Image (cartoon, rainbow, N blue to C red; front, top):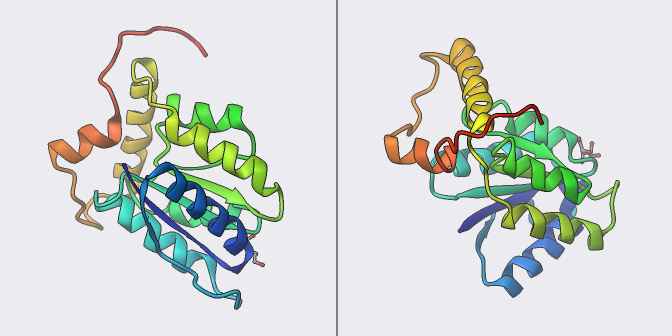
Length: 176
Ligand code: RB5
């Protein structure tokens, strides 16, 4: 798995903690900045990470800012990106299992580094469950197509779609 990591000055310290965690776990990553504590604009870094994930070069992305909100909003403007702001492990697992979130966002000013690292570990381990969730995620893609059609050419080859969709329908029906 290859992970793209980034964030603004508000998330710099937690980004560093996450990088150490990825190193300890032997997970390949690329740091897309910011590289100093100077004030910068979070959409610039959200865009870099979102485009790295969209391109298929990275499987997942992790974005950090003060609240996790700005980077989530910005990243979700990129078609094919499903960025989830998670400040608890239950949401982190569900973001993968139900929503197939390909970017996790965190707010350094909201949670401490210990919880942030547990959230990252949970999110990295969890897998998309497909089934009824695949149908719903597919509907999110249809919304993107409705508003973005013709505006940007992406790498939606069959292989790319397969990797970003997760396992095919496991014919689970339910309401959770
Ligand atoms: C920067 O002060 C702060 O606004 C930013 O890190 C983030 O919280 C935005 O959503």
